[in-house]
Amino acid sequence: MISCEGLGNGGVQAVMMGIVRNLSDEFLFDMLLFTSEKRFYDDEFLSYGGKIHRLPRYEGKNRLRKRVDYYVRGRNVYRNVLKLLKNNSYDIIHCNDEFESAVIAKAAYEAGIENRIVHTHIISEKSNMIAAVINSKRRKQISRYATIRVGCSYESCRSFFSRHDRAFIVNNFYDDRKFYFKERDKEESTIFRILQIGSFSDIKNQMFSLEIINRIRREYPEAVLTFVGYSMDQYENKIYKKIDQYGLKNNVEFYPGDADTLTLLSRTDAFLLPSLYEGFGIVLIEAQAVGVTCYASDMVPGETDCGGVNFLNLQDDAGVWAEKMIYDYKKSGGRHRKYDVSRFSQSNIMNIYKKIYKGEKLEDWNSDISQSN
Image (tube, rainbow, N blue to C red; front, side, top):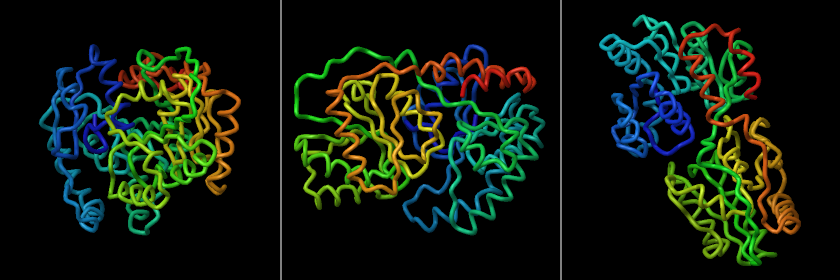
């Protein structure tokens, strides 16, 4: 299994670890990581008997060097992965490394691995010309060398694969043993609690969330917006400046990316995800599993709606979002509702991955994938 970086507590890593956790009795997993840093899931992964291989990328703070590294490291990734695969006896390779999966799938082909899976978890939005040219070439390589192409949503398949009609949608899953509905009667309180989970970045759009909470506190002065996530590219500093600018110190709180999200969801009145784009957004499924009403941008795939997601336009003023959330809060009093998220349950999706790994013919399990949408 090829990660997209390290085994931090992120969405892609949660998918990979869910697969390992559930299928380790039938398959022995090794993991290739692109960081030297030990992260959230490392110890758990090793407990299942596999090895961790590392091929670190540039890990400094220089943004220019980081960007250049993305453009030039493909050849080095190809050589090192080919060497790794030739020195080990693998039957399957499962790439979660987005466009770099192209050179990895090529190395796997040359190493004689017959089951070569390329899995996209994103909606591809590379804007600069150099990245666009590189990715165009890699799309063709993926079409040539991947035996199975998988995406977490229709939108991710359409934006990532050159022939998205030949890709298969396997939606992300949630841990139904951990996230489940429990009756909750909101106690009388003026505190309106809102939660957003995701790494601090332009894509996750936390700055817009601050605009929303700034509007909401006009009616609910003690309202609290809780951010859960890891800092990325100093974006968190912009958030702190905006908090100071608006005087939101008492209305915003922070938790690290490895926080107990179940506990936070259990006390939450509304879940917020104003992302500029999302490959899927499994946090919306987890929130709905607990019973929390969600507010997401219309750039988030519609498959995530199990009856509890309100899709709003990012072109609308933050006040429009705030008014909708306030209106619903007044009606519900913060009570949780039961939503049917069963099609995203871990057990259902694991049956699909099991068939993929066993190399069963696509027509044999295409109906199962259709049911997972």
